[in-house]
Amino acid sequence: MKSRLTLSAALLFAWLTLASCKGGHHGGADASETATGALVETGELAAVTSKTFVMERLGQRWYDAKISWMAEHGQAIHAGDTIIKLDPVEITRYITDRETQLETQQATLEKMLVSQSNARSQNESAIRSEEASYALSKLSMESVRFESERQQRIRQLQFRQATINLQRARRNRELNTIINENDLKIQRIRVSLIEKDIQRTYELLPQLTYISPIDGIFQIERKRRWQPEVLTIGDEVDNGQAIARVPDLTWMKVNTSIHENDFLKVHVGQPVTVRLDALPGTDFPGEIASIGRLCHAKDGSNTSKHVKVFDVEVRLLVSDERLKPGMTVSCEFHPDKS
Image (tube, rainbow, N blue to C red; front, side, top):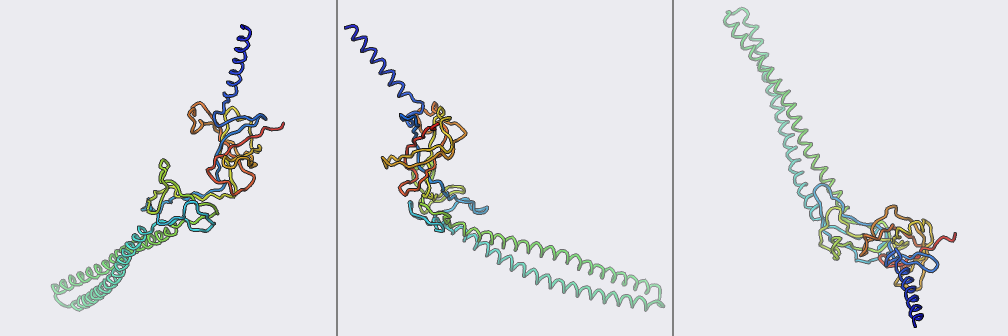
């Protein structure tokens, strides 16, 4: 009886030890190892080529814009298709205001040109008048050479006054010319700045329409990363905010990871078999395209503080319409035959 109990206890201990060894693999719940020694990790499909559309900064005045039109979420897109339109009302209103200001400043410039032309005519008339007075005073002074000293003194003073008046008129003309040229320069700069501002603002209008440079599927981004709701027509987007993306589904990749203890078991170019949870029994060939150089805590794991992984990108070697971004897959990393 005792020998039977001893044998049963020994068998139970051996079974528990074997079960403990199988369940204690360092890869965690998402990793396993096949009988052939191949590692298996879960991952997510993504497009190799994907274009993200971000709200660009529109000049110095517009830090957000309102969506006025978008393609449908999941719609097939071809290169050259319009996918997003932003509301141009604020920009067109600004252009209208600036064009009104431009008309006012151009009218001021034209008025200034006419006013300065009249002022120059008046200055020239004043100078001619002073030149005539100067010439008469000079003749008068010469004609009194034989008159009394008192009369000669009066004529000299009159001639000196005429000389001063003529010099003053000429000096005023020079100063007015300088002032008028500066005023015109300042006014022309005002007009030019408004014209350039209007031109720059007109150049922003094409940026309100987003055109896809590639074929793919239109995907609308979420309003905020922590919110499940996606953007809709009428929403305002901030400068730098992602609005949508267009992944090209021709070629797909898998974003996965490998446990730090398995880091030396994989290398770029290593063959990988990819299997989809949605297509059991169907294998897709792939290979490792890149391996991250930094080790980090595994995301989404309850024991992420203790599980450290390296990011791995697997490129699929075949193109298949059934492969869609976001699908869950498993990657079987085949060991080197050497």
